[in-house]
Image (cartoon, rainbow, N blue to C red; front, side, top):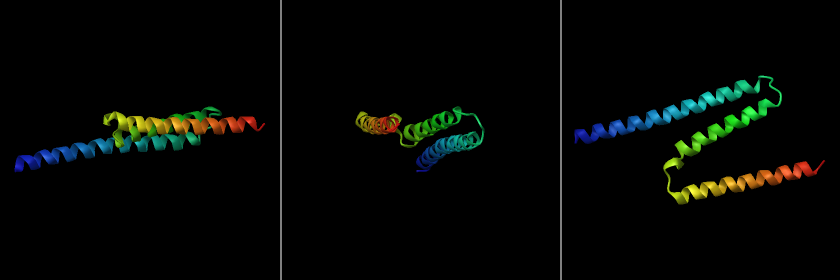
Length: 100
């Protein structure tokens, strides 16, 4: 029984260590995003913010939601959400550009 308990303790420790590392990476990206918001870089400021946001979303989707190890049907459902969101952004952009 004690070997099962030790194995469980190791698995719990690995899970906390992995999630803690992901959380720390998200905090670093948050701090970087906040710092870059106050740096005058012209047109690069929103681009840097978008790149950082995509990196944070990637960490959450692939690691916290464990989509990297998910079944293909779950990956397809997530991909369909991304495609739908992209279509909505494209339609919004087309509307904004048409209102000149």
